[in-house]
Amino acid sequence: MDFKVEIAKKISGLVDMEFDKAMELIEIPPQPNMGDYAFPCFQLAKVMRKAPNMIAVELSQKVQADDIVEKAEAAGGYLNFFINKKEYTRQLIEEVLEKGDKFGSSNIGEGKNVIAEFSSVNVAKPFHVGHLFNTMLGSALEKVYKHSGYNTIRINHLGDWGTQFGKLISAYKRWINEEALEKEPISELFRIYVKFHEEAEKDPALEDEARAYFRKLEEGDSEVTDLWQRFKDLSLREFSEIYKMMNIEFDSYAGESFYSDKMDEVVRMLREKNLLKESNGAKIVDLEQFNLSPIMILKSDGATIYATRDLAAAIYRKRTYDFYKNIYVVGGTQSLHFNQIFSTLGLMGFEWSKDCVHIGHGLVKFADKKLSTRKGDVVFAKDVMNEAICKTLEVIENKNPNLENKEEVAKKVGMGALIYTFLKNNREKDVVFTWEDALNFDGDSGPYVQYTYVRGRSILRKAGNVPDAADLSYLSTEDEFQMVKLLGAFKDSIKEAVERYEPFVVIRHITEIAKAYNKFYNTHPILNAEDNVKNARLLLTKAVCTVISTGLRLVGIETPENM
Ligand code: ARG
Image (cartoon, rainbow, N blue to C red; front, side):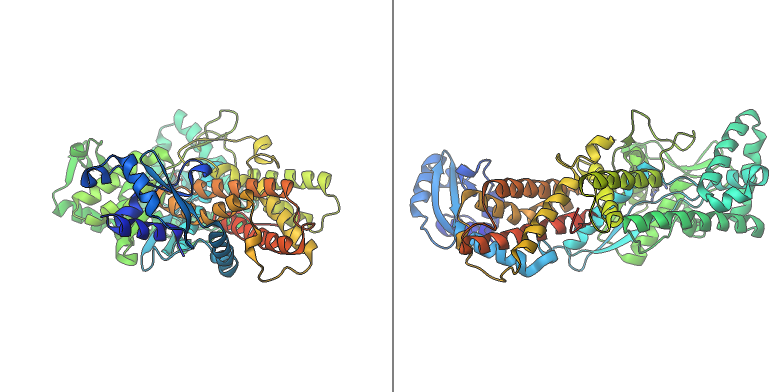
């Protein structure tokens, strides 16, 4: 039973108001002593020709105590409802235990295809910490959408086409170290790519050579194509190791090269709609009516670019998946690009352009360095992950030297610490990374939440046999009720995360649950309580563990059984 729904029904029975309207108006009071739900009476004042506080008083007298509410109190213009704690507690704990890791799921998205594009790394370039942030965010978003019933399609729009491949081929022919290429492909490819830029500054003729190579690639020249394919295979070999460490999979790797034969059609459509304009030899679409700078479609040498491929990709995705939403998780620095793409699609007459969304995010900073691929100062995702795991292993060696499968635990906790750090705030905010914060087992951190789960699980193990059912009315303290309410609000946190495209809402919520449980554990006996109370508290503990592990899983964090 949904208590909010039941209260809305009561209200629409008492006054002249539609159920839906009542649902919309009901609020959660800011403090527990103001009840569990509040109904503002201000909108009724006009119709009833009475002051809101008078209406609240009248209504409070009409509400009868039952399985849903204990009482309703007037406070100013609000009618505060105090729900039936025992009933609520019983129903909620039973629901969590029955649904297990499906708790909080819904069918809001049933029958709707949602594309989650994320990661979208570049062939032959480092998988850097910015991509790591992006990948974690996109994957978490995909999971909360899936939990809400949407049919999600995970796309890695690989950066595997473009003039940079001309540069790379030119650099390869000049400076490659084959041995290094086989051993550490991306480092070596990145080294020659950086070198290309340094040399091209001295000798601009290199740029012409690179352009010629890219033209050859676009024309399908076999030698150049083979080299490109090799760069791609070697890069994907490294990327797949990273995805494996993160437990992340994709449904499609259709990247930029996939659209190389689909752009003629886009250019044709633009021309037919009279949208293509000439500008210094290049072809552009004017977007002045949207207050945006023009978008380039073809360069003066006829080469296509990033934006042309994105137009082709959006059209292909609509045809292939008939998406309800096409979500691009890409750094905030590309917001102009996506504005241009979506506006151009609109001009082309695709009304579904409104269903395309750019979900931007901030940068990752280490001691105020901005990450860039042109210079050499890039922080590799692989290095950060390995370091997190190593550092966690050290902590475990210190704190719990006899722990079994330390390596496995260190992986779960180290990765959890990273994911938590990247996703704990509003996604637009830059992540300022420090190891102290990430690996702090006491503060707001992944290890802290994981540790709360481990603690709960250890209590359940110590208890021996945990009953399947118990008289839950023994959960009678205010702390327990507040704990249960937090578990109940888990659903709302998922809904909010979906609506705002913000997985941090879920992380924050399970952190609140972890804090409340630790407080409860420190102030109330569980295993030493009398049998009825003990059994009820064990079931509460089980429910807490279920919700914490579900929330962590949705943001990509695994839960160890010991740590
Ligand atoms: N590969 C690009 C980068 O690393 C991101 C691609 C974003 N996706 C897109 N459809 N344009 O910056």
